Image (cartoon, rainbow, N blue to C red; front, side, top):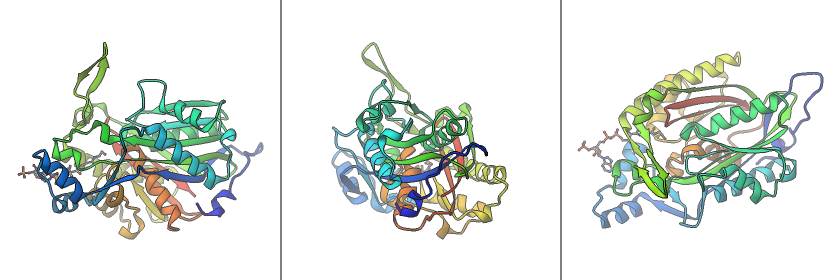
Length: 340
Ligand code: UT7
């Protein structure tokens, strides 16, 4: 990450209210990249018909990164966290809060955040997971911001890490072509100036059935259906509406307007959702960070992965106003407005 971000690390003021600020960003991808063409060939061998043309036209996805069987969310999360710590110039020892957003944890327990904490050699502070599916990273960021502002923590690692390929039904072409694996992370520190200007979180459990992995482990056996199922069109319609609403609500809460936003980083599910959301908000397409072509939908990892790409390629700079948005199972949706 650009060094000017590292230099913004600030100490909380005793005079003013404590706020939080992103001072480092990092990401990690598995080693295996699978193009649409390769996936279509693999699926054809088991009688599942799809094509590069369909996937690109309906979603904008061109490829996805799939974890090898021995790679877990905590491993990808640890790599992303290490990259974020390096970019922030912060030592793992200085972290007193680890929050990992994931729907594909390594274990039932301990939390993936505790496993990442162990892998990083952090022995103090708090660590826990957030489960808000594709809104998870924004939920986790808002939670860490609240804990820093209330004085409970001073330096947090906020991570989104997923191996969604593990919960896909590879015989269901309507879902298995859409997702990938990966992780992204930020370092958030106490600061005099925000940082995180405003966040808004929402959920409406009445829609839980439109996107779910409704299985569990009971008495040593899988109970229910342990694969992702989705009513794609219902999710699509709801997503575009709530992403528009929560973006406006969050920007207004910060006393700013949509015109002030330099970069929109929405959850990366479908390029058509990104385009429709930007159009509704009146944000020019070149101000939207889109990585859905390269990563597919990585659920809670998608927003920090996209942020990391845009910081690394120099689009997102220190001082830019970035609006991050999540939407997904629950049904959940959330936004966070951040001065980088
Ligand atoms: O991360 C959580 C948030 N998730 C999302 O935001 C996903 C939101 N939903 C979507 O992105 C879209 O609804 C999808 C990409 C999932 C589907 O696109 P769609 O334009 O809504 O397509 P559809 O479901 O209406 O399917 C159209 C046709 C169907 O065939 P018929 O019934 O018209 O003959 C499907 O069977 O496309 C067929 N189809 C496929 N064909 C080739 C569905 N999946 C595939 C496939 N390859 N992989």
